[in-house]
Image (tube, rainbow, N blue to C red; front, side, top):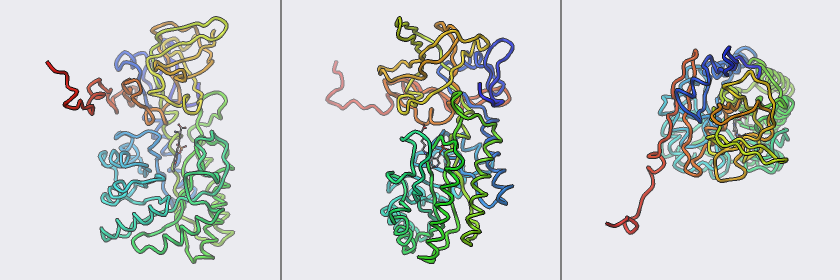
Length: 444
Ligand code: LLP
């Protein structure tokens, strides 16, 4: 079990999250079910905010990277906690605005923002757009001109830092679809280009070196490279950058192979970042930039679990025992995408010791539809309740309707009481956008 106060096992041997008994949650809301502990989400947001307030005199802002988990309620929580957000699509922006999130605290990302997304961002008065291509600089400038405004932007730069994480979630090595590379000169050229535009206001730079990274040194190295580049730009172009957005990426606990950090321990990442930033600013005699960080996974990842009911059990003698659940890759595609590892708990008999090596499979017509391979569990029976831990990030947000399975609902637990924040999909939802052309309509 992880170190967080979020989860505990009660006297009945049931897993609890945020004080709510998982067996009761399953009875009340059904399975599969995503469950989030509100207290944990808020605590993580506060850890980062406090670090910037106390270690950096509040000269910055925490932006929740909402791609990790986007829905109206999470934006309300971020707003109440006085942090900003980042969005990467018109859909995330729309959701945030629908939740009443203040547009000036929204940063927009994406490596190919569509024309209408840029238009929507400008129309709502978005705080900042992080440009990631020449064509985007052009479009932002043109759209801003039409509206007679000057849009604040940052440039996404690629510092070329190799962070230890899965190749698919590495984003700042030289071969990346993200960012203007510092090393091959495009970051400098893009800076000059943005400065030549009259309706964009270039404030500085953004970089994001990847996700699920534990090494603090990787973040420190990114700061060093960015600050060196900032100094070069002052020297070569006379441009003094005043904002530095360092993205997110702090790793979370999924299994015993991962580092366990108490919530407050995440301040360490900002301590390292801020001390490196101060050292570099003084070395290059640069003003301390307004600092932004964009944690996503570490805010919601360990705050969430998924509950499943065990269905068919299949033992292949000498090979494996498969336990199928009522969810699968349609609610958690991370094994299929990254061979991600998870920790399961038998939520209705959580005190029993492990006796078997099992593979938890989903219900999709796809061999790679796996939730966890070779995990130790007590003997599991049909009807048992399985909890998969640390599913709060990039599960619901990457869920899909493959095989026309319904995306599970999300509930938020506060003081032991759960409420829907995303309602269950229905079969009607699945066919809502289907159209039968006239010529195919069944006659008679
Ligand atoms: N900022 C930017 C610009 C990003 O691209 C990301 C994540 C973040 C912040 C937040 O990073 P975090 O703190 O969550 O690590 N689907 C993958 C993760 C993709 C992350 C993409 N960018 C997964 O399931 O592991």
